[in-house]
Image 1 (tube, rainbow, N blue to C red):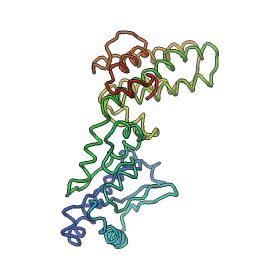
Image 2 (spheres, rainbow, N blue to C red):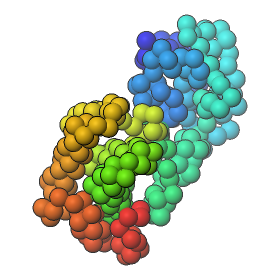
Image 3 (cartoon, rainbow, N blue to C red):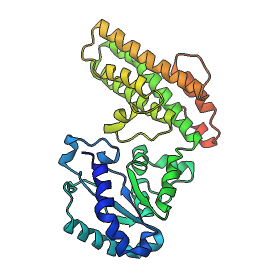
Image 4 (tube, rainbow, N blue to C red):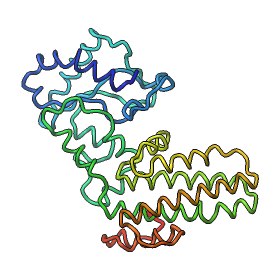
Length: 311
């Protein structure tokens, strides 16, 4: 029972025919779908998800020139749901995002701050990656005017390559600093709180690097690992190793050696992929070297001037 599919069926079976009849001219310029906040927009909703902000609903998006039609469309939608209540009506919690009628520009601005998407590298840098992931997830049911999908395609084109390189350079530096350097030092000191913190930072940066290597935006942290395991590049191989690390409960000598092996294998997989994508060419095992090499290949003067560990 997937919320996205339930909403899609409701739209086409219940909403779309009367919408077309009620607004024949406007219909030719309308877009509709379910995109943005919510586990169903990533396809990850389950029984646990249904206690809040879940159920059947859809956005209606209009072009800027039809902004004055929004109040009437909102009333039409309210009447539709009142007369045809879905089997699973959407609930909304205190902090849940609303799903309604708006211009496409207002929708994108609410998520990423730019109605038509970012243009300059500094604009891209300001947007939280999880918001970019929400802006391109879910499903577009119809886009008769093509305006909503135009911005979506722009965002799906991914970061400017120099910014992707800058982020990857920073990830390499962080992975080296945590997994390849400080993890062993914390173990020797028996500083277990910091050891676990370092391990978490290592895992988080590895997950981020995998998304960058796939040119796919990393979602909200709750879904980042799950989504990563589905990525075509390194998703399965790295996912297995990170799961082994996460399930480690004891820190005896044998377990720690196994953990070191997982960390080393993950770093080797990342280094191999960096070389395959011709982002770095060194054979050094230490990912700091890869990060510095990526950093030096950046063309943008400002990004190249930043320390390698910063993005």
